Image (tube, rainbow, N blue to C red; front, side):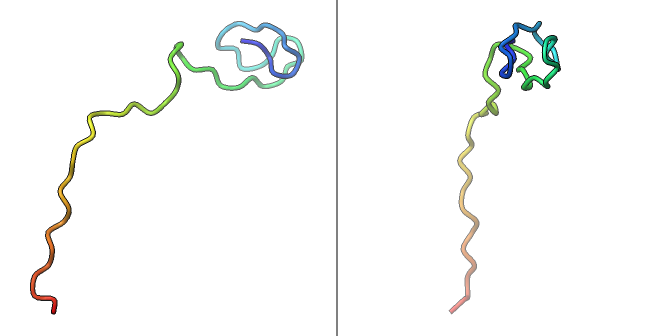
Amino acid sequence: MKCPECVTDNPEGAEFCSECEKKLPDSPPSTQETKPVETESRVTSPPPKSKGSG
């Protein structure tokens, strides 16, 4: 991982740059993007309409 400050190449998972000691951005544990995993979207029916109002 390259340091955004001094562009030094640091080992994967390093918290701080080995050259300028700036805190490195959190790197994902794998090469996949860290996006929330969308599970099957379930269609929920709207709540029942209350009777007798009116």
